[in-house]
Image 1 (tube, rainbow over the protein chains, first blue to last red):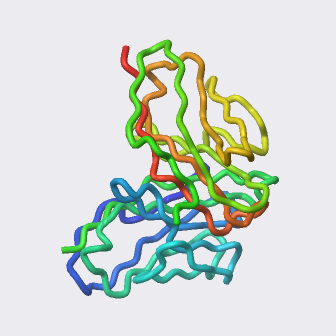
Image 2 (cartoon, rainbow over the protein chains, first blue to last red):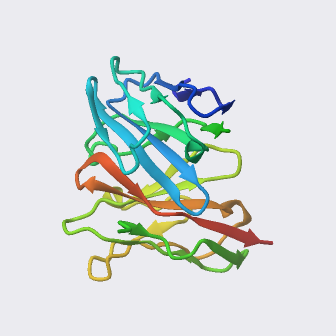
Length: 116
Length: 111
């Protein structure tokens, strides 16, 4: 089944303990991106990747790192998580970076992270 | 500064009534805009996009450059339309990349 898979789906951790949220897509998509969803703030982009080894900052990149070593994977790394990173995180991918070709984002189910 | 504004956090209508979810944007070029929807316990999914000018599930959206708006409309709302709706704007115009979402509008359609 074509989809975007995130793991873990739920995680409770403590301040400062490094963690990685994995994102994998099996659709050979070129574009991948991470968002956080907070009440009243909607979706805010953290990082995005236009292709392998090409990543760039979104609107709220502070405290996060990403890498795109393979086309299918785009992990989100929190080196030293803090309570203000408690949020619902979504990974998304798109077949092409060109809006005219599709522009449609396929989203993962979300990862709910709590940092104590 | 908000690139995409959805002024209504909550919107309620009765079944069969018309519904309009507002989206205003701030962009200097020709924007490409999208509406995404999140039904309860489902993934976010594309509802419609400006570039294809299609009608999905009875919803339409017209780009009004003069008013910098891309409001989502449906003439007769159905209970299954109850969901969270997000307007989205790629800052790169014809390319994805930096992508801005509005804060979302929670639509409730009462029976």
